[in-house]
Amino acid sequence: MNTYPDNQLITMSKKIPKRTKVRVEVENAGVETYILRLFVTGILPNSARAIVNIKAICEKYLKGRYELEIIDIYQQPSLALTEGIIAIPVLIKKFPLPEESLIGDMSDIENVLKGLRLI
Image 1 (cartoon, rainbow, N blue to C red):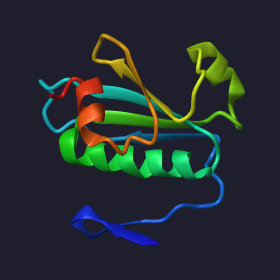
Image 2: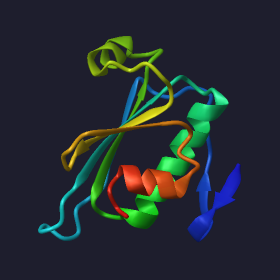
Image 3: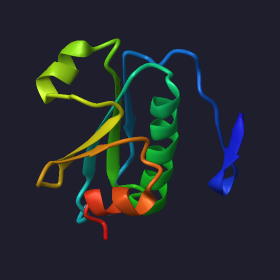
Image 4: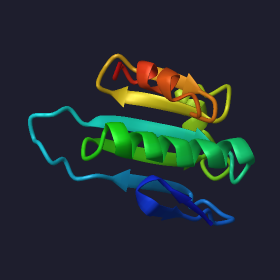
């Protein structure tokens, strides 16, 4: 177990549920909600880092304005085929448009923020 910003304790289980959705209440109805899909492969190190990193980025920069869906392609390969996934982990920003894809463990915060068009 590790402690992350804001003393938030994050633990990783050995198995990621088939399809995990993190829904966050929109605090301000006039603000766009970001809809994000993170495709991962089980509990492999890059996938585990991507999950931790994107959750931290969303909580810091999109708090209250995002929906994050984590999809394990081992559990749901059809979704990966539908999206045309060729590399893992990959984050797809579905909304706001335009749709963007970011490949990697999401550790380069500046690159992720640019991909999400937050900077």
